[in-house]
Image (cartoon, rainbow, N blue to C red):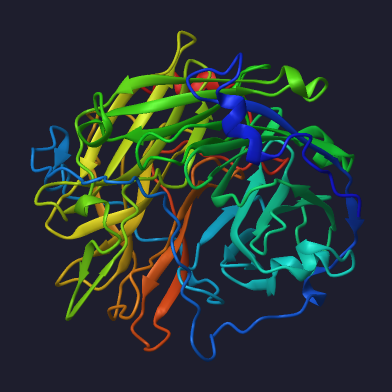
Length: 542
């Protein structure tokens, strides 16, 4: 395999940031590639399998977070002005229409991700993946992601790896599966399915030499690029990969930039498209992070960045921002400690990852406006009262503004590790973990209808997976969950995440479930996707 090498290494980015043309400490573009593709006609059912029940001691992965010399978190005890106590409506969302245990392999935390296509659900846990049908039937795997590269050699096959990503591209009905090497080779290993069939349709395999370890890597589909972002142990790294080239199996380049951290907020989250209506041609890819102003200066805010790649002349690519949107005041959890969320019957607490946005930053184009929704963990009062801060941004052509935001804390239990998305009718759902001194770590979801009062999850919680025990011996939890919307109808949400079943010593499991709002005007069309004029039905969305 021909592996692209960076024309500029990330080791010199700090110097670039101080040079001419650097904007507010940002640097780039770094041009990576071109990387050639290797087409493999692999049938995933023929790949080596991994055990679904770990044997021996499960590896516990250390969390990487830049430390600020002399940083002392300030006490935060002020009230949250958008906190929601209780449930606005008596009825919650309906019980899941599909619910099954996902795979359990490898290290702790599971890094659980997944996405759905018209005919498949693909889940990744640690560095393995599996394909299910939409009733929960296992079609292929679980297999190591790196086994896709078994016939090509190189670091993607031989090196240890971490931080998987699974993304379905709803515009092309194709799959993107990535993992990063952790042996110092710093490869992004990216597999793009050659067809809609992830089991037997084959893949185009790429190795991109990033020159740096992209911790907590996340990805999103945009009109002209696959967007990615990661924590670089100080600055935030962002990339745009040539989507058209990768879908065609052609040599592809990536352009990369960095932005300085805002205190401990060193991670940006890329937008990820839901639905069949893309952003306008030439619209820049959007990234966000939240910043605790009380801790690191300024007001509590969301910061937006925009990346406009030019794959014809990569050096002309641009990365702008931040644009600050003042958020309702929020407080970070536990002084940014990794030991935060309590459990029944043990002193062991779990990591809330309060300083980073959670996966995903879901984009949907309603025709009359565009929306972006996201979530992260905040303190609802008392220092360790973990709750979900969720938000919706909107743009009608004049720039992004905060349309609504809320902090979901309906009772004293702790809620964190959230993922948010919006269906084609504008109904919003959030999936997350729940734990407390009385509740074992579980998976639940809640939501709101498009016409409900803003800032409130009006429909109460539904349990996807009830916990049966407490995790001991490690504070590592989840790292992320994933809530996505089915492209077959635009209405069905699919959630995957970690819960604790209580079968010690390997009590953590993953669950996949599907649910929907009865008020969503979904329909399965002949091509297997939601289609039609978005403005015709989105005009009812306030």
